[in-house]
Length: 296
Image (cartoon, rainbow, N blue to C red; front, side):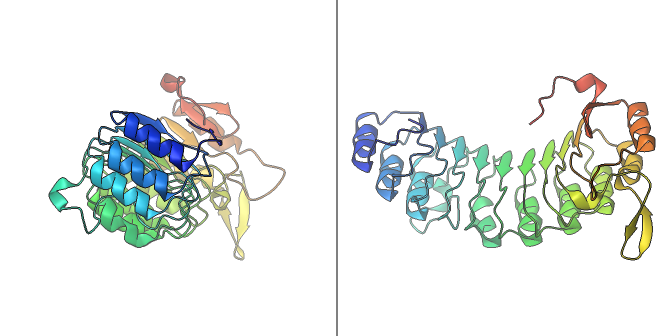
């Protein structure tokens, strides 16, 4: 039903009452829908396994609480751009802890700008969660990352694009606590440093994909660059030592430079080749044995 702008709340209510054994529902981009639809979905679709609700701006926690309370078989849930949400996950007052939906594997909260660090309290009950996206949840800080890595150590995929408040403290927590992490996206996170990334790569040996798109502060340009009155080497060369000991197969360093025009660091690029990385495009590196990986 994605993009069906002519469907009203009443239409959704009738649908879910009549087809109450639906397992997959997508109401993305249906901006007209309110909690009347969301609550009806939660009350009627108890067999629901996959739910996609992107840019449903009018939906609030009233809907999400009912969905998590009743949809015990939910495996995949998307609330991308649902800007009125302040928490997501089981734990409403009316939900006994032993009835919390623990089947959820993938949760996409991209752009839920109302979420704060306190939202971890409910997310922590999702003990089967493997993939979490909190990109563009701008209020989240290092405290969120420290708490979520402690309560959900089983995470395999973590997306945190545009979390501009997080620092190397978050990278350290990830490297120590997420022992099975496969992919991490911290693109546009402008407070991370090469030192923190080295610690991440040295500590998180299962990490295969690392996306750092537009982390300009990393400055992977060649040669000496000025920083606070002193000189330092471009960030690319500083990453090499950690890469020698990592299992990384995909590294996105595109737009990780501070100056235009971009200066290519041939020494760094040659070392990457020696380590088995090919440049799929400028500063996007893929191990030769992993060319089938898609560039996003």
